[in-house]
Amino acid sequence: MAMTSGPDGLGTRMRHVLEIFETDIAKFLADIGLDDYRPRYSPVVRALLARGPLAIRDLAAEIGVTHSAASQTVAQMARAGLVALETGADARQRIVSLTEKTRGLLPLIEAEWTATTEASEALEAELPYPLRGVLAAIVEALERKPFRQRIAETAAARELLER
Image (cartoon, rainbow, N blue to C red; front, side, top):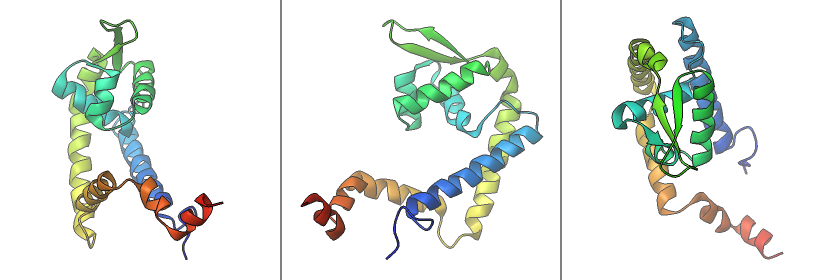
């Protein structure tokens, strides 16, 4: 029986794949002169380009991450001069917008997005299953029944919970 926390566990494999993607994309970004730009910034930039300035809460919802994750990414981007933060109508609210620095880098960033998309499509063509489809199916299945519930329904979990 494979343990999910071991080296062959699903979560471990997903993190490993993500690490490979992010490391190689970051190296390519450095190759094209975007040393201070991280792959995790792209969803933020895309959302702000599409929607304009957003509160961190709205940005998090737009890109599908927690408020904490969005806040951490925005803080890194602000330190790199890629986004500006202003106080919103509510003093606790922070509004995120792109800086002129980022707008100046957009041709490079957009070219990287295109190259990364093409490389992703080429990789997917080599796979026995379409990766985006598999990932979408995983999300849909977990929205129907959260993984926590799936764990709790196992015999091993029932034994633990009955202790």
